Image 1 (cartoon, each protein chain N blue to C red):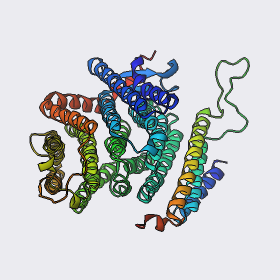
Image 2 (cartoon, rainbow over the protein chains, first blue to last red):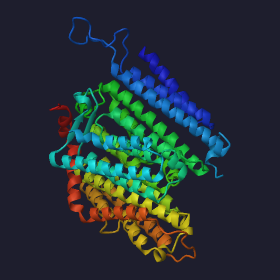
Image 3 (tube, each protein chain N blue to C red):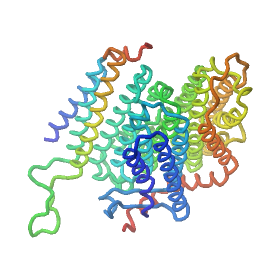
Length: 114
Length: 492
């Protein structure tokens, strides 16, 4: 399962970087989104995956019994998703503004002196 | 130690009050100035406590160390938080001379305080994931401050700035995920304790390089600095001053933190890499500065080049070099903020910062020129000013560590700095020019510049006690046990 997730994260990274190297703003932003989702998957799987073992102390026991799902990466991913969502929203608005100002969504036109 | 949370809570409350308060310009400016003054005072309180009684720790909500979020202030963090207060007060002060109405209506003042909160939080946190969160707080505030306008140049700059910083954040987050996978903790002190027992092959070099790339983008190291000169000359001078003074320093701070706590015993190749990047940053930054004819762009490239000094000293990891680096960072925050404010006055006087449109300032504005001369020559490294002392400290550090070629390079780059700043000074202030001043320098700017200039002079006169402080800060960084036991042992 970890291998599958690692592969998925790798594909997301590769696709994200490929899109970021394209010239259109929209593709760049989708690339950023894929990159941050690839990172989220990576954090999630880096913590190790366990099936159907919630980190809850069972009745009668005084401590968690290994193996259990590590809750910390899930909390990290949740935070990262929220931040990533905000940043993607911001970059979309910025791209819209750039498009309105420059009149093009070609990255090369943005850098050209107007 | 509850007051440790103040440098974060004060700007947060100031921002909240600013958002709720009536949108009258005068009222907003006064609240903003009051808030940043309180921030400066609380930062000084934290610093005095740290200076008197050693590393201070606050476990948020009383969760013991590796489980909750920890705020830690050692001498380095405390001194940098004071610098945040100084820059914040100066930048909030110059708002009285007028802010672009569009920016002011869309939250210029609250965003400035959110930015200060992010920077202070990044310096104070004892948890790497929390550091990422503070980075994002600081970045989002800086994104909006930079993009709050629609001119083509500002859009272009904001776009480059946002994209490269989001990439850096992704890399940082990736490194955090891998680090957690390898160690099971992200608390810095706990990491420093656990790290030597991790034996996964190659994990240290992979993680170190990921952190190096992420923080080098933020700090502006070669070959990842191109976004900085492409963006820092477009926002209004006050915002550029805050960015230049604080944002790259957060990257430098993060590099210092991870390299002293975690990667101190990483393969030497890593330090060679950092050293080579720093050396290239110094040379390329200053050569590029010589090629520029615009006051603000000269400053941008000087900013980049001088970051190289501090990271080159970091790569030696000796107490003397690290003490020099901390001294230089503190000197540089004050001076570069001041110089961006000077560029604001130049912009007001002549509507341009291109040296072609400047000249003759010294004749028309003797008081302003006298004030501006100190930071210009301090950055240039003219004795006896603080820039010279900082370079001297770094030079001693490099020679003591046996890195003679680096010492030579520091001297050559120092000469290039002198050339670049000296020429810029002569062209913009001394040469005769037909152009007349379009306006008088505004008093808030003069007050802020005078204040920061006084501080530079104080750092020059009080260099010995200050150097003593930075030496102790460097010792604290290198003696990790003190940091680790302050955070993990004796937790309440």
